[in-house]
Image (cartoon, rainbow, N blue to C red; front, side, top):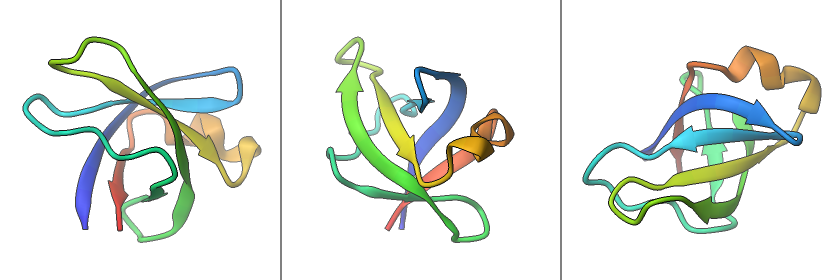
Length: 76
């Protein structure tokens, strides 16, 4: 498992995740998990500056989006 990044905001029904400095972003389609290894969603986009990009994660449960703020997500 590897760290995808921290959820910094929600917008348009997706979680916006900041990729840690020096890490490569997860590929589109990558399944994301939370600290308890529960599936949160899948990466649907990679955007932003090349040196520290963001990824957009489409959640399994859109009602849970607000609770993801500040959470660290991981990739299997």
